[in-house]
Amino acid sequence: MASRGVGCLNEAMAALKVSACKVRRRPRDASSRRRQDADLEPQPAGLGKTFARSMATEAPARDITRSAAGAQSIVQSWNPVSTVPVTIHSFPSLEPAALEHWPVQHLYLPLRRDLLHHAVVFEGDSTRQGTASSKTRFDVHGSHRKIRPQKGTGRARLGTKQSPVLRGGGKTFGPHPRDFASRLNRKVYDKAWRTALSYRYRRGELLVCEDGMELALPRDFELLADRYLKDGLREAYLQKYVAGVLRALGLGRADGRTLFVTADRRDRLYEAMEQVPWEGRALGLEDVDVKDLLETGRVVMERSVLKEMIAQHQSDLVSRVAIGGFARGGLPAGDKALGS
Image (cartoon, rainbow, N blue to C red; front, side, top):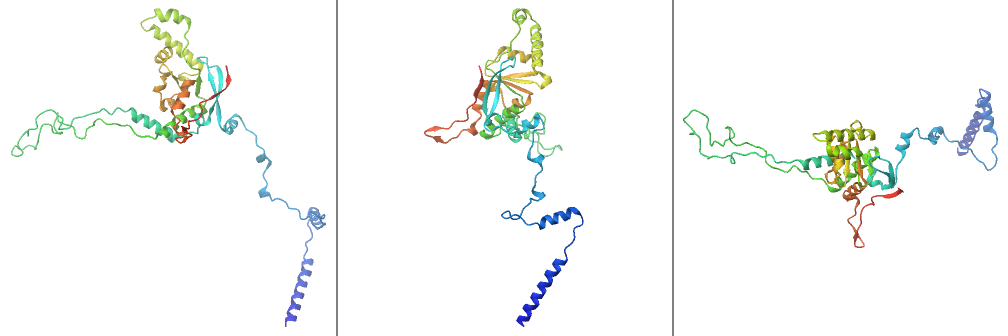
């Protein structure tokens, strides 16, 4: 039985080989015939089987090599690693005078709207006075005698004349002096400062000028207007001159107003900007906050002011760990690359 079974199996296998040889389809056209002949040709020794990559894994040529479509694509693809260039201008001509490199952590932070919102709310809460005050029934002047008997008069029952339901009485749940200031982590607030500066820098709205930024007035103002013009004529002359200067420099009302920040008070600049509040404003370093950096179209400041701002608001970059007996400081403010 075993030998008979093996014989039947051999016969079946032989029949399958014969049927496979007979069922060979003839090619339909010349191209398919050439493809079939190429498949039947013997391969050279040592090459083995040829592998072809499927179309699913092949990348088109236009995706392999890309070129910038325009200037905006180049700007978006530029991602500095450690430093960014800062041009130092001369004032009021705004001509380039020097070039410096500042760390990315100072002037190229990504936009964080949540940090800016927390900082603006924190500053607004700190500036609220909270001096509103009212008197309760125990603070109003007068005796606490009962006005009329409790019963028998036919009228409503009343206690003292300090009652809140009577005119001249105390106030129920009235306002009292309080502190509206909220709390914010110092590191969050400092990072919000540098985020605001970075936002201005990335948009090209931060102009850094040399120290001693002062408004240059014409000679006729020194000789005539400053001495002899009175009754508002001097202020009118100054107003017209400053408005023309800001319009020529692209810093006026048409460009969103400008904030000038100086280390010390510059009398001419401050007086001139007071005459044209619709064109911009001038503030000292101690009077500037995050909201001031965001509400105008341009920010013009001295180099020493920018350096002091960064020095005061980099607590999140300063390590508290003492190394060799000294605490590790923050990043350097800026290194001069070109300039006189």
